[in-house]
Length: 582
Image (spheres, rainbow, N blue to C red):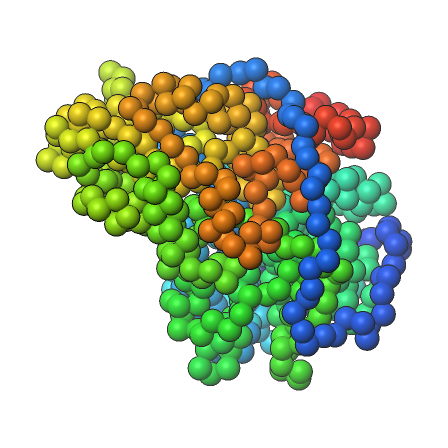
């Protein structure tokens, strides 16, 4: 049974009752940052924000890890460990008597964005009630738990993390009380100035209960002097740098916010009864029978309440959008529409481009399931070669397993992927995958296919080579661990052991996106970051020390990675950084 908790507040671990409009249970400093710097009347708008600013700041390089990739006997997520990992998915519902149950279903649809924690906050009679837990959505919630969440407003969250039950306090949505009421928040993304903001807040007396960057947002809201409430959100977001698609809930309002660059997706839909729905992907709208209306625009705040309906506000001056291209390559489900484009169509075209620009004589095209399937279909259709299921993926592999005492080579991969000898034996095979990160899993897959009798194995990758780490809400290895950052395509081919290897050409990807090309972030392919990372990045074991796990800092292999060398990280956050190593 998954661990779970109710009424979890990141600002008060001892809170035992639902938060109501009572005096605050914690104190905040009167001032911290500059007050609101714009007039209320300039916020309201009815048009889509214009793009006016472009950034081309390159990143120099990364702090060297100088450590080989470990291959532990315990492999929590098997083959997916060699893929970038999305941090989370969010959903918000306003105006439906079954809000929490619809939220539960929507989180099921977003489960691929995070499998290790889930939570829902519902509002009933001006009381915010939360249920959060570690595990899949179906592990955390049941009929009893959902019956504790009545009301017509709810927000939900699914989270990717790595440390098991000790991560419970970091499972969102977070709920907190402040002097004017209560607020809940669910966040998808990553703040690149989180540690600087946290250090400033702590210097002014704020007390943190989690190691999540989302808690910073709650503190900034609480100390803001702006009125009404949604202006506190705008005020807080003015201090944030990086990626954030967030949904907030108060006693009477649902608020959705997207950062000015629009790194992470957020869409709005409506049910036939008029209920408003926000979600990370349109697949969540489809499941609960909500009609897709539009994206939440980059830099936009949408406020929903009974009195005024849906109000749209301009958050900040809008630079050129930099939407995450990996949503179309890997993260989003194929049946979603992300950034106004069909994910299925994008991946199909990626495969067609590979067949056109990297053709090879072959007998059959197969995919690395599930994320490589649509691109493989595109490749096969363009090449005129049959697509077949050469690898069968097991859907019944849990998060833990007992490894045989007599070590079996490639055990983790074999447990999840099984080759079909009848499809592969004696054939020249094209294998389509969405990306290569470290290359370790790709080499095992090639070996499996050849052991099944394939005469030739040709790898085709439906993305450009990944050379840079992501700082905007995606868990990627440091640059030194990325095989494309260390090796040429030919060297990777030799490492993997395939007969030929080709990536999706970067120029062809941009050409395919046509007029939308400049609206996407390609930092992982180019090393050019729209918002420069300024701080130490905590990778995978981000909550290692704050959650009380035992072990010295040196035991975290590649856990801490410096930002670019052209930024003096130690000078900016030296006190906090040094404390974290104690």
